[in-house]
Every structure is written in structure tokens, then in C-alpha cells.
Image (cartoon, rainbow over all chains, first blue to last red; front, side, top):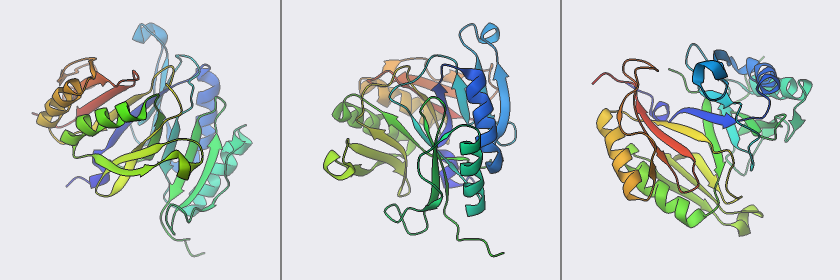
Length: 138
Length: 131
């Protein structure tokens, strides 16, 4: 049986001006969530522009294409398995040169268990990690 | 298959046009308009959320036309849903960007269809099941 939320977002492609820089940033930012580079395609291979895909396992869920800086920016939120992973995501993003766009914490205005953090990537995209689970006991 | 992306927010230039387009195009995928926040609430812009089962996961905000466009693929449960998405999206004014069919280049059961929304965002429905 397919999870209902599984049905919905298959993959997303954003455009960036500097694929290498963005790729390095996302590798650092998303590693705490278990997300890594799962595919890379060169401009020679596509006949257009170079792409890199991020995901868990073999499937790319977030693709970035070197098709120029995108404006207005896009917002993407990844699901984290724990609040600790949300904190690790935020620290890793800021350490990798991302801009703090809201530190780890509950966003009551969304719902009482909405624990999230926000980082702006090198090209202005607003990347979030969210966890709906309670704090894990030590 | 685990889900890693919880939600996404895109910007559009004409919220009324985008709302009408997505309402029609996404209905075959069992997605509907679930939330609306006017600029008076957000402080900046209108925002609407489309989703399923009470949870919005595609947000649109009226912050202007996005350039270059975003590509977004939504999962369909069946090839018939992909067909219905394509038909509904074209009828709602979307531009044909690749009709329903298998894309062997991705994998043998990759059945997708592509439509450009009123702002040029490339919206896809894809089914990974065998026929």
C-alpha cells in the first residue's frame, strides 16, 4: 500500500547559476537528513545544461539545473526524521555558507508540533527542514 | 519509497490565473485547493496551498513570474490519471510540453505528461507503475 503522502511530490528541478557551488552547499546542508547526490548529468549528455540530483537511495527528488539564477526564489522543505536532524541541518547549512533564515524551533502558527529551521542557499532559495515528531528522549 | 520533500513554494505572476489552472489540472491527481492566505494575512503577498488529505504541499505565492521556470513532477497512481491530468491541464489553458507516454530514457515504466502553466512552470504528472 502506498503511503498517501508518497503520491504527491515526485521530484522538483530548480535552476542555479553555479552548479558546482550549489552542489557543494546542498551536499553539506542535506547530509544530516540522509540526502546525498544520486545523479549527475553533464551538459554534453543532456544537450542543454548540466544537472545534479539529490535524494535518498537511488532516486533524485531535488534536481538542480545550471540554467541561470532563479528569481523570485523557490522554497523547498525536506522532512527530517528527528528534531536533532533539523538542528544538524541548520548548523551544517550555516557552516557551509548559507544564511540563517530562522533557527531550529517550534512554529506554533503552523501547528504545535511544527519544528523547523530555515537556511538561504548561495543563490537565495529558502531551504527548510521540518520534523513533526516530539523531542527524542536522551 | 520514502518521502523527503515535505512541501514546495513557487512564485506566480497572476494568482487568479494560477489558481484556476492548478485547480483544474490537479483535480485528476486528487489534489485540491486547501488553504488561502491573502496579502493582508501574510503581510506581503497572496499565498494558496494545494494538496491532498488535508495537507497542502504545493504552495503558490504572488511574488512575480519566476525566471527560469521551476519543474515540478507530481506522482500519479495510474497511467489513466496521467492522461486525465494532461487533458484537464490543456483544457485549462496550459501549453502542451509533451503528451502522455513512456519515457524509456528515465526507466521502462516511466509514464509521464508535461504541461506548462500560465507562467511557464513545467508541471509533470508521472506514474512509475507498469501498465
